[in-house]
Image (cartoon, rainbow, N blue to C red):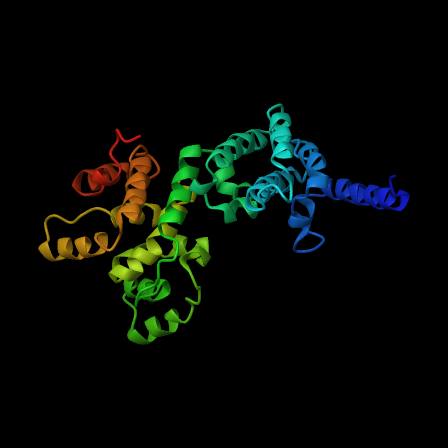
Amino acid sequence: MTDPEHEYEMGSILENIQAWAQKTPDTEWPHQDWDMEMASSEHADLILSLTSEDCPQSDFFVSCLYILVGSCVASSGASISRAKIDDLLLKGEKSSNKNVLHWVDRSRAFLKNPEQYDQSIWTGGGWALDDEIWRYPDEERVVIIEEIIDAFRGVARGEITLHEADVWDDYGSEEEAEKARELDTESSWEEIPDEWIENCGGALSFYDPQSWQYYIPAYMIWALKYFRISDSIASDWTIYTFDLSENNPELKQDDMERFQQLNQKQSAAVCRFLRYMSRDNERVDGRVAKKALQKYWGEFCPINEN
């Protein structure tokens, strides 16, 4: 027998959700865990209905769909059943919102091989909340980003930090470099803000091999996300750092010391990054990306590989 008090409470909650959904996208969340509270099995159908393009908060509810799928995998169906997710995906196929259609395609790929993806991004709604990935939906780019995250997870930072290297790039003093170093308090490269990468492209030339290995995934991911819309030189500098010097023996030795710091998995991720970038000569220096592949990186992800 249904509890009338519970029915009233649920009705009130649903009314509150629907009312909030009509607020402008810049409206603050009722609390910091609002997305996690919304992304529950009992709200699943409502969430999907609120992803229609005429809903001001549609992007928020798309991110909740990602959280639902990630939660299903992480909990082995305890938080929301696989049958319910499959039902949502079937309904999502009929959506006119392209972001929902991308969610359907990506979710099916994720559910088929969850071990190939970073589940923390899915459980946090990360792809839906990334405006640049949504702006240019591109499954290949998404896969490369996930591969980079997986390959470079846990890499430790070396001696030279990002802001310290940026000072060296600007011909700064030892004192300025030491002070700049204090800004770099992150515990992993995944925590580095995008704006740091955007503003410190030239720093790539000043890292020791271990720091280069630590920072390069952040640069590659930034480039993949923003190269189409940013005027920063960071995208091109990211490509240039992989171009093996040939005319200067000392520079070539320095390059090889950095390149050989990477393991097979990391080198393959770099190779795929360069192959992707080599196809664009308008917004990045695709010509140099092709040269870098020919000189060194191409062997790590042969074109004919399955």
